[in-house]
Length: 243
Image 1 (cartoon, rainbow, N blue to C red):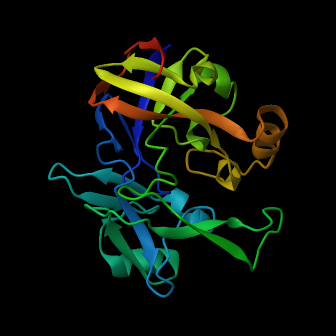
Image 2 (cartoon, rainbow, N blue to C red):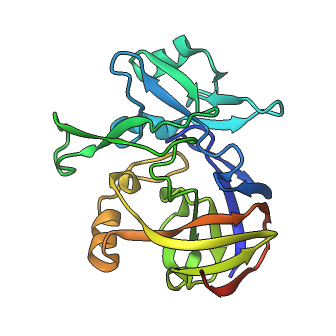
């Protein structure tokens, strides 16, 4: 398998940026999920599970290492009043910085089949960057696994040309100059069914199929054992069981 696409998502749940080369370390891709939007009234972070509108904005890392948000109308901003107007709630854009505590965020609704649920679960995300879990620092999926599904539904950092990533659990592999250790698969939620820019419609059959055929999982997660650089075209070279 070789790297077909590399993706970074600077602000949690917003669209990201496709890159030709990325640096990775134990926290994943540099600049990935390093910011999130928080509701000022509840103090909780926002995800597209509860606020689907987030998927229609995008984020990109500036040359100075900061971030900027591009709204659906093309407005480029970090102004929290403008962001609040877009989402219809008071929000602030927070950087993970050197944060060591977990970040509370919105979980999926108790019943994802209810169009407008009134009860939501809360869970704490990972310390540092705003990943859902401290174990999901880098996510990878292959074109063989995706089939005809649009890869943008699954927001993987690395899209591999080929197939076989599911068999890598418990293995180490070299990718570019980095060494990875593959762990558990990525559990999927209602976000995979959400409409997105670029002609991606709402499709509830995606999640139903993943649960029926793949036990609710799609893509794999990996820990970065050795920091390095990944580039489009790099080959994934398995190194055997991890120790």
